[in-house]
Amino acid sequence: MTLKQTIEAFEALDSARASGRTVVDLLAPYPAASVSVEEVRGNKGKTDFVKIIVAGMQGRLCGGAARTLGIIGRLGGIGARPGRIGLVSDGDGAVAAIAAALKIARMHAQGDPLPGDVIVATHICPDAPTRPHVPVEFMDSPVSVEEMNAREVAPEMDAVLAIDTTKGNRILNHRGFAISPTVKEGWILRVADDLVRIMETTTGRSAVTFPITMQDITPYGNGIHHLNSILQSQPMRRSWGWRSRRRQSWRAPPPERATRSTSRRRRSSRSRWPRSSAGGRRNFIMSRSSRG
Image (cartoon, rainbow, N blue to C red; front, side, top):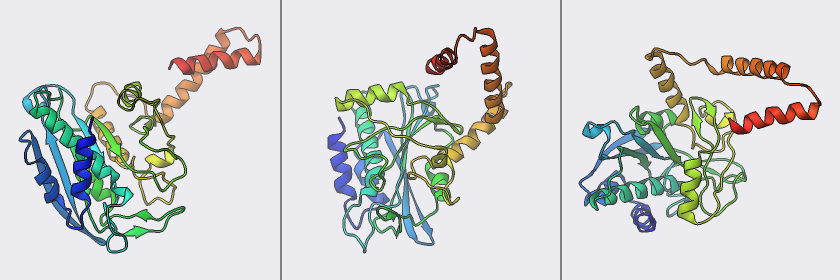
């Protein structure tokens, strides 16, 4: 349960004076959590980028080999002062990320550290600008998405859990939270079974998922519609993935070649199997897709 930590994070950030120092003070009782703050100024104001690192028992920071998890709280700002008073819904990403850091740090202090290192990153801006959007206006950010990626996405992260709010969209109309399909190096994969299990265990309800498209994993500012900024770390992680693969002895085919080879395999499979009917052929291809 992270209800206590969520309330603590919410109350701390629901202030016109909230800043990176607020997060430092929240995590001060937990020596396992290392917190760094960087103030960045942009054309539309300033914000404090916060990075929290909690070392795992078998993580790389301790000389182990356990993988590192990244948790990114995505948002434009926690407030839109002076136009709007109080914590705005866009602040959910920061609240959830900081609540997760509080819970993981407390687990460590209570003798239940995670196996791998955890890196939590977000930014705190109580007076962010807004921009027009249908059906409701979007929270903007004082800095660009590129600035956010440079400070929130770390090469040490083997996987990233990005948290963002979708209250300004009609795609997902649900009280609570939902999970998207997994994205890896430009490929939209199926929803991860482990995340479905964790969601059902913690909520006591059936898992809720939401769709994403290729448009959502393209960079902001290209004139294409995006659900929100939840997948904006993907373009940077994709470039790291290609660089790391070039250092290996084998090289996976790029997406367009993989697509062509899949088409050839499907044609060859049709030639090997009897073509009793068009419906039978479709059923065979669908069953292969469901297993893959």
